[in-house]
Length: 223
Picture 1 (tube, helix red, strand yellow):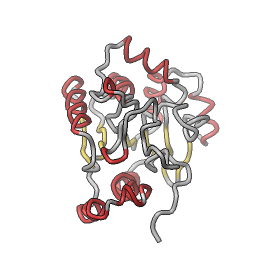
Picture 2 (cartoon, one colour):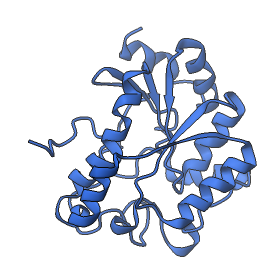
Picture 3 (cartoon, helix red, strand yellow):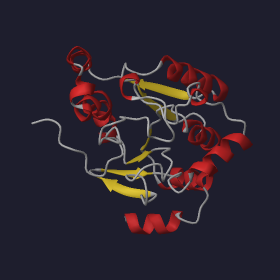
Picture 4 (tube, one colour):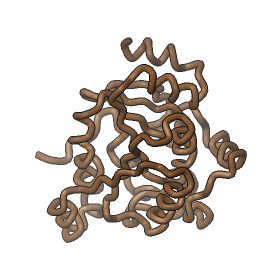
């Protein structure tokens, strides 16, 4: 089926039903999670639908210690099959010594988040993300399926609003990210995250709003 047909077929399904149908329709499925402030919703659903499916976690080496502890908490609670993905050592070291996040945050994300997934993407037909919709302009109006280069993207929670997400976490007593109670609405790397509602604490004061994994047409950061 083409993307339009898939979006029409899945639009009336609830997120859990979407995941169930997805694993019937596709075989080579890539799953990633940032273990951020809303990740527990998607992981809770995935645990019910496909409990031992690999979950790829990109460790940029710049994450908060609280993110690592949160990952461990959810991993233990649901016996998740988490696979750590690391950037190349030389590129990660360069961004550390160069303070690339302060000079060119797009390049920093490219080296430490986007490129580490390239090999994995080439081995899969579809890539699932638990991204919640409506939290910034890039995410508003995004459809359940979209083509991104050679891989099909799938966002089963893209039409879930912020309030609905909070109710879901409350209803199922899902653990909160430790930084959520400290005023962090969204959590990424330490150098680029401050307290703030929603995603306003990510790359504060800069035009950047996404790490590059969810941009339809990522900026060219390398010559």
